[in-house]
Image (cartoon, rainbow over all chains, first blue to last red; front, side, top):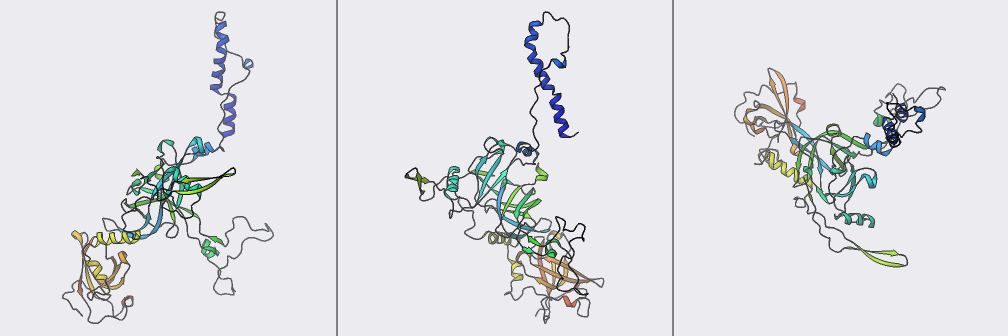
Amino acid sequence: MSNIAKSLLRLRFSQQGLLRFQAQLQAPLKQQQQLRTKASLTSPGAIPYVYTETPTFDKSPEAARHRKRLLARCGLIGVKKGMVPFFRENGDKIGCTVLEIDQVEVIHNKTLDNDGYVAQQVGYGYKLKNQTKQMLGHFSKAEVSPKEKIVEFQIKDESNLLPVGTVLKPSLFEVGKFVDLKSVSKGKGFAGVMKRWHFHGLKASHGVSLAHRSAGSTGQNQTPGRVLPGKKMAGRLGGDNVTIQNVEIVDINDEKGYILVKGPVAGPKGSYVKIQDAIKFYT
Amino acid sequence: MFSLSRKRVLGLPLLINQRVGFKTQTKTIKVYEPLPNAHKDGKPLMDVIRADQYKKLDPSGIKQKLLDSKNPTRLRSGDIVRINYKNNIKPSITGMIIALNRAGLESNLLLRNQVTKIGVELRVSVFNPIIERIDILRKPMTYRPRNKLYYIRNNRLDVGDLENVKGKKLL
């Protein structure tokens, strides 16, 4: 049954509405109780109106928030520093990415009443140069040092919001658990179809002239007479938001402030990486 | 997991001239001190991690010395070596180094041997903690004029069965 049909039914035969209506009738009925001896049904024609609950619209921000697979707690910001090998106890060697966690503090909490969603604002590092007055006021309100990078982590419940000024350390996560890593990939500029979409290109010989890396045909003739939308062509490559899911945490060091995660992470060295609990494991 | 930060104001607070109507007011914004830096002695994090890993994987420095280009008894391609594993997790391996890849902690050797007249190759990470030690069984009288000896495969220059190599034949 479609959602529209459901809401229409709810409008017509809302049980709660009927109950409320009956409660309203109670007062005059009590006066007539002495006269009445038998149970009787109220005729539908005698009901002037029925109270119905306001339906929640699917497009409302509140409904959208409930649909999202939100995590219970906030994550960390790290900076990609490079890769190192890591040897497991059985002698397996794995390549790991080093994510530096430096001066990560909670700056601000967003609540349902104020902002319409629940989120925790977290800052990374220390930077005083070129800070605006507005941002300096924001940091001083939280009693934290000026930060070089700020991100928000939307979370499910207000009860899990940490107090402002809390220092977050790598041991927020555990070794062997899984995280999602969000970062911006390396920008490649304007790239041809062979690099961008892994086309095979045209032939090296057999009469091909100055078009060895070309895409070839992009469509038909007079019908449809146009290139269909979404056709893979040359264009900007890279510089996208990339999420790598279910990445294992290999090592953690609170004292020196770093996390080792298994495998590569999108983006160049020095790029900021959002580290969160893996959505497929912990929601 | 987490703790509350120290609240110390950095040097001088920031003074800001703010216009309210026709008057200028001076407002101060407190700027807080950064947290004490992690114990890195001002070194880049990657250097710290690499130093820690060398300390953990090669505490005596023997493996690093085997790769050191200034060491006259270092490993070179053409040497015949035996890899001994800790607690006999795996049986020891003998072979001739046909390639040596110097890549810091990821340095590895490509060993070649013949088992029942079939050429066998194995790549071994030098700093793998399950490797107890690397014995040099024999060094050739003269080294071949290449550092990568891929060209000896399956021709008259190929290695024989090295399982029973005995005695040192040093330079």
